[in-house]
Structures are given as C-alpha cells and as structure tokens.
Length: 64
Image (cartoon, rainbow, N blue to C red):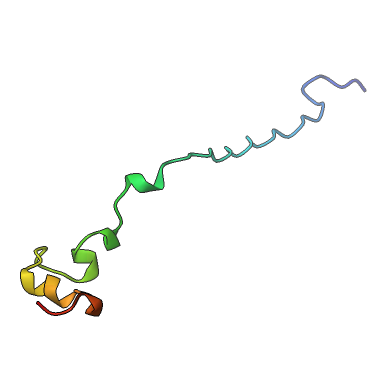
C-alpha cells in the first residue's frame, strides 16, 4: 500500500497571534475635565456675579 501526498496528515493551521496593544502616550492636560468648568461645579448659568465673589471671600480678608 502506497500513500499519496494527499493522504498525509496535514498540520492544523495556527491561529493568527492577537495584535498587541500599542502604548500611546498623550498629554493628560490636553483635555478639559468636567470639574474644570463652572457647570461641573454646579453653576448652571456660567456667570459669577459680585455676590458670588463676596461669598467666596476668606474671613481673614475682612468685610468691606
């Protein structure tokens, strides 16, 4: 009995290796976060009036 090349066991194909993730170094300060805005701190209008600034004055600055 002779075997032909078609009868020889074929090796199973190997799956392609998964792509390795690339390291991407971006400057984290290029993007603005929500807490960098007035809206992120709960101010819906986006404007701060004189009353707001007076309410934020530290006690050691005194009353004027």
